[in-house]
Image 1 (spheres, rainbow, N blue to C red):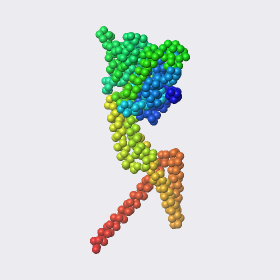
Image 2 (cartoon, rainbow, N blue to C red):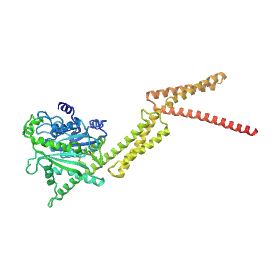
Image 3 (tube, rainbow, N blue to C red):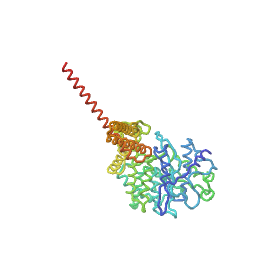
Length: 528
């Protein structure tokens, strides 16, 4: 048990969405990038479990039991009910405390992702998200809506943490998502969200509906029921909520006990928690976290990888950081943008991976014509990868991103072409060899000019020698310092032109002699 505690103690809640001045929020992109782009998880589908709801209702406290279960199941590889811990062990994980003031601000992700394997063999990674409590004295309505909206859009399982009952205003907070969900269903297939888990804490009426999932479903059915005489707005809300989530469930939990609620020194020890609450935890957590119950994040029916999640965070933060709460249509546009950017990133990765095998840093020099052919072949594969991924926003939006992708791949190819040319050993030494040859020939011209007393030839030869030596010096300076790159490239072109001219002249001369020899041979043949 001590090793487990030590492991959890080494983690912390990373505040990825940070409250700023004037009720704004900023994204800690550096911290989020370091977490999501880890080599061991970036290509895994993500399971994101978020807890949202009113402040001071035990969200962080609950998530620390989630950590215990995940550590026990997916890190230590153990099973059974021992995950809950021993009676005198303090609770570690996300920061929490008793009292009436809020503790969590912004959105936090636990620093230690949990790697799991689904029943079908697919490897996923589990993230836990803690959220700023809503409806405290420091938050505006927009703050509350922003936190709730971001956590719901990002998560695959949104746990809606409520106190004592499901009230009408609790359902009203889902209104933004019903409007968004309607738009999403009009422009794409499937439902935009996966699981909404109502969690009613401190349930005081077990004689009406028993604790646990069964009583929760009874209560939820009653609260979402549509009946005659109900206001049309309330009917629409209930209808749309059930249409935009793949699954809606409810769980009723008892009060954790007076020591938890009233003791200022309570540190999470199981000995101070009521047996009914502990029994409920043993039922609830496997329902959400056991391998067979994990819910990977889906957008447009496709699983979101950890590296894709970074794009969605960035895009959503753009639309939620204005002075007003964004319209559902704006949220849909942001989702479509991130969805297309994800397809672009995947296609670019296909191109980079395949071209790395062909002309990467450790690969030998490739002939230019062959490299061009490989570029077109690999680019077609990358475009196919983009086309085959389901995208939101319609054909016009996808075509725009496709055009940007093609442009980006062409630019990337130019970089690869230059890198490939740098491997050409002949090109590396060819330019100074050409100019050195010119200098030697020019010097010989000077010697001959002096021998026959032709000063014009001597002057021309001396100028050619000096010019060739200067060009060699400039070329070496350009290649060794990285300065004057354009001049260095021009010198390469001049050397190529001189080499091509000499080779062409030599080839023409050889061809002329061969033709003359053939003609002479034919004439001799006739005479004989």
